[in-house]
Image (cartoon, rainbow, N blue to C red; front, top):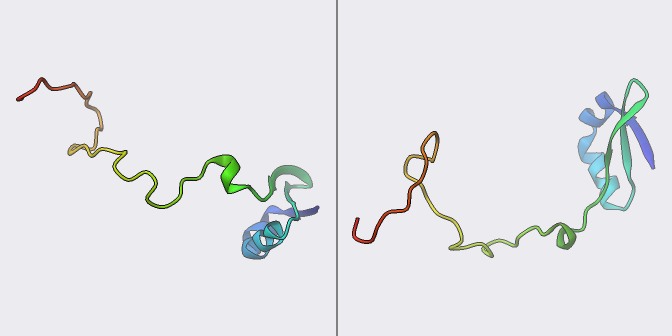
Length: 77
């Protein structure tokens, strides 16, 4: 397990992610105090959808749905 400071993590994020992909964990510290940890994830465990698997499951709202409630419309309306 590797520990780095925030500046190092921001500067070398790509290299740290490569380490994580190889199975290492990286702790990010602020003033020597651990605040976050980078670890690899198992895509199947967290339920990441494969491309196209959600096709037809969504809907489109013309007004973006901001600030308005959506009321079901009666047939023929």
